[in-house]
Amino acid sequence: MAGQGLRLQKALGLKKQFFPLKNGKEMFLLALEPFLKDASFQSVFLVIAKEDKDIVSAILKREGLEKRCVISYGGASREESVFNGLKSIRSCLSPEEYNNAFVFIHDSDRPFLSTDLLNFLKGEVNKEQGAIPGMKISQSLFNLKKQSYENRDDFLYVQTPQAFFLPKVFQAFSAHEKDLASYTDEGMIFLASGEKVSFIPGSEENIKISDLATLRQAIIIAEGK
Picture (cartoon, rainbow, N blue to C red):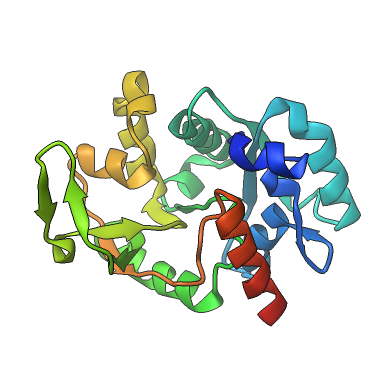
């Protein structure tokens, strides 16, 4: 949740992660809930902007979660922030724990992760040591560079959480440390390092809230839950 989300911040008057989306709970809290309720997750690490430390700490204390969540700070890009989080995780684990751990990397602006999708990911990540949810594309795709239509059946749009065997994904990030900003998600870095992932069906409700239109959609979903 280290991203700025400036498009919505200006409209809302606050960062979208702190928007009270359901029952007064902030968006990032709703994104955390599936992990906090699952006993198989040893710890939850929050990567935040430094200037948000006070507000995040206050919210976690209000919810009684200050001892359940570890805070680290973001970098100049999304993937630099993720790498900071991975470093924080590694520093908290013993060598034995690290060598047997899996990590699930999620967005604070995807507040509707279902238990079913999370459990599916947990099962699949063992097969290729990496698992990513994705959705088929229903719209036509036009390639501006090639000036031609693409076969939409050849594409997925990916979601989070993305799950990986921790030593493998840490190694991948380390190998690409100098150019992390050129990657748009963790799966790109993992695949660029020669690793394989299993793509699983995502969820239509697992939307990423990036603008007012998706925020309105999220409010409708929240009111129906």
